[in-house]
Structure formats: structure tokens, C-alpha cells
Length: 110
View 1 (tube, rainbow, N blue to C red):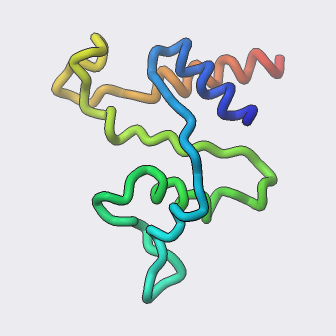
View 2 (tube, rainbow, N blue to C red; view 1 turned 180 degrees about the vertical axis):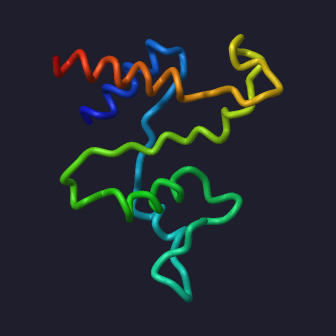
């Protein structure tokens, strides 16, 4: 909860929007495999939930540390409604967001 609050605050400051999505247990069903412990894709239509469920398997750490899944691929190539993303080249989405998060985190622990 604390990490989500900090990241959403950084998003508000940077103009790179985020929202908190649920991580329901059934999302893990999308990455079940017949031949391996898990598969690395839930398929083309599996959505962000399956991606987060995959990452959770490697970063959850039994709840010993906070983690977040920020999906940047969908916004990586521009958006006409956001002036600095209106480009045919890579947008750099997330750089401003993560820079703001690091700045705010540094100030919080100074």
C-alpha cells in the first residue's frame, strides 16, 4: 500500500498516469503450464493480470518487500493526447515517473 501510494503520487507529479490494479489469484490460472511449473505468457489476450501474476512468482518474497508491476509497453510509442508523447519515436514513458519516485523517496528518507 505504501509503495502504491508513493508511485501514484509520483505519477501525479510527472504526468505519467498510473492506476492500481487488482492481483486476483485466478490471474495465475493464465500462466499454468502442462509441461513446466509456469509459462511466461498467458497468451495474446491474457491481459496485465497474467503478466503481474508471472512477475509475482519471482518477486513476492513472501511479503518481505514491496514490489510493483508498471506496464510500460502500451504507452512506449506515443499518444496524441499527451504533448511530449506525440511522437513516432519511443516516448520514454516511465522515465519521468520513476525519476519523480526516486526523488520523493530520497526526500522522505533524508
